[in-house]
Structure formats: C-alpha cells, structure tokens
Image 1 (spheres, rainbow, N blue to C red):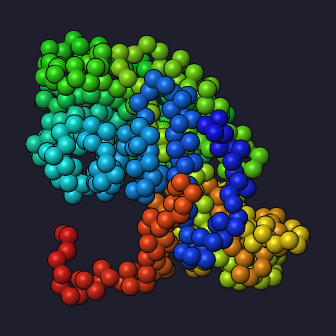
Image 2 (tube, rainbow, N blue to C red):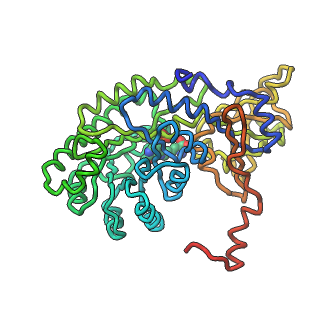
Image 3 (cartoon, rainbow, N blue to C red):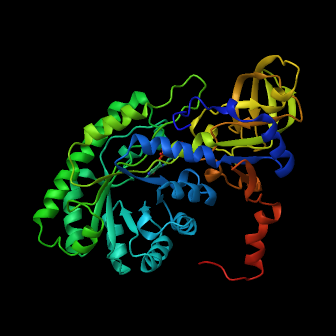
Length: 445
Ligand code: LLP
C-alpha cells in the first residue's frame, strides 16, 4: 500500500519467525533489505512529486539489488564517487540517468569518470568548485555540467549532515552566475544547478526547506537569464531540444534530505505539504525540478539482525553484548542516532518477559560502541536475536573493518523469497590486500 508511510510500518511490522530463519541460514550480523518496501517508498514519493525528476542518492544504500529495483521504478541515480557510478551502470542505468556529484574529487575519480563519459556521453557531472571545472577541462571533458552551489542554509538531523551551510560544499551561490557563464564560454554543456540542504530534514524544519528552495528558485531565474543573454550559449542546442527543456537550464536539483521517523513516537513527513512547499518556494522556473533522496527509499526497508552473545549485570545497567557494532552500523556512535531495537526471540517466546533498562553494546574496543544506553527492553537472554530497525539507509554503506572485523552479509527479500545479495566477508578478506602487497601483485597506485 503506497499510502503506508514510514511511521506506520516500523520495526514491529517485520515477521519475527522469518527474520529468525534468515539468521539461522545466513548467520549474524546480517543486513536484510525488503525490496518491495523500497519500491513502495519510491512510489509514494514519486506520487507526491509527479512533475519532478527523481534520482536516488546511491550513498544511502548502494547494494546492486536496491539500485536495480529503484532504477526499474523509474529513478535515475546520483553518485558520489567513481565506485558508485560503476554500480549505477552495472545496475542498468544509462549515462543520461546518472549524475556524478563531485565533492573535492580525487584525481583517480576524475580519470575514471572522464573515461566512463567517453562511453556514456550523456552523463552529468556536478561540480562544487572552479578547480574541478579546470581539472575536468584538463582531461578533455566538455560534457554535461551542473554547478553545486552553497546557499548558506542548512537543515538536517545532526550538525554533521547539514551540508547546505557547510563551507566544503559548493560554490557560494552569489558566484554561481559568473562561474556558469565562464564554464559555458569554455564549451561545457551547462545543464543545471544543484544544492543539498542536509539529511534527515523533519517536518519542523520546513521553514528552512522553504527558504533553501526559494533561494534555488531565485538563482535558477538569475542563471537562466544570464545564460540566455550570453551568445556563447548556443553550443548544445541539439541536446537541449532532445531533452525537451524549455530554457537554457535543463534542471534545478534541490537535493534530498527527506527525513523518516526513527523513534516510535515520531510522525512521518507530510509529503504533500513538503511537495507543496517546494513548488511554491521554487516559483516559476524555466527548467525541470530534480530531487535526489536516499534515506527515504531505503531506511525502513532494512533491518540489521544481531546475535546476543553475552548478558551481564554491570555496575549501573545490564549490558547486552551483540555481534554487530559500530563497525556494522555507525550511526548511533557517530550522530547519537536512535535506532529502534526489537528482541525477535522474546517476541516468538510464549512467556512474557520483564522490561528492564539495558545497554546494547558491540564488540569494538570503544566505549562509544553502543546501540542504546539504558533503554527499556524485554529482559534479554544469551542466544536471543535482536533486530535493529531503520538500518536500510547509511548502515552497510558506512560499515568498516575497524578492529579487523569483516563486514556482514546482506540478504534481500523479493517476491516472497530471500536471497543472498552480498556475501559475508571473512577474516581472510581482511588480510588479503596485505598478502597481495607482499606477494608483489599488481596494485593500484
Ligand atoms: N544528495 C547529496 C548531494 C547528498 O550529499 C546526500 C546525502 C543526498 C542527496 C541524500 O540525502 P538523504 O535523502 O539520504 O538524506 N550518514 C548520514 C547521512 C549523510 C548524508 C550525506 N548526503 C546519516 O546516517 O544520517
């Protein structure tokens, strides 16, 4: 049901017996992603923004199966690195459906992207600095170019993800016209402007969203006017006609950031009012509206399953030791993020368990490696399986091998079946690059 917004279908909606079976079969910790839910989330958002072009921000969950499902639903793919572009192309996206958003891009990324552009000339490259325009020109790139601007307005669930005001992102909006005129003069195919206010924007930040979008609308009009006035802007009339754009700018990309509820009592975003506010704040523009959400599509479609290996009475709390940790899901350690936790074994047990405050902790040697502190949960027992909710976005993507821990496996659910989508890493995988170095195998410089 497309109307079933993220809050309604929280962690409790997952089938405990089915999840338990997955851990029995594939081991723990285990990421599970429900592709049907990903598709529903896409359809709901697409219905709220019928006249926008939608890109999926791959960084939220880059699993090939997720990309393929979203691409099949109609999403283009917004990529933050060469690796993500490779994933997008492997998932079946064509060059015209791929945007590469370069944030201080490494030379190796640009080399790779320019190579990929030769095979996919409709690829769009979004840059956030004049140096990157030069670096692209040095490599012979004169393809589709979008400028990321910094509007000086941020929003989001945590200071660390409020990109719109962070100096590292984009060219200050006041400089955009000059930079784009110059790029057009140099023969680039200037197609759009872009900005991303931040991630996890909630309903109570709608005012910042409005102000941000209004600024993008103003800028779009200013840029269009400047480009229209400039004679040099005729280089790619053919592309422009083919894309059915009405003005000199093909699109205005206002980023992603649509928040989803993580806490049981949080209300979901009212998509209709976000969409209305967006259109109203943007005003009349001679270009398509593009949005590029990540989290919204995948967050509540994923759970992280983890075995309980130890339970002990500590000085002030009960500590539940699980095999997932900050290397598996870093959001609690990094942003103090709340993730709902459900004890699947307790739910499957006939006996009621007492509810007591518990601290769920991972196996990493840092005191910050906890998923929750003193949270009221049914008394956990050794051997239980816990499910950590809303793990579909920025979960596996931010996993790492700290403490030389292999990353977990990922399973997807589709058409009533579960299948392994990415195997579990082994301890051998952790040491393999060193073995290769010692054996003198060829390495990437
Ligand atoms: N577009 C750009 C240019 C972005 O940088 C991002 C996210 C998105 C789109 C998608 O934002 P979303 O719709 O997913 O909010 N690791 C953090 C989130 C960092 C997001 C960074 N950029 C977290 O776990 O909350």
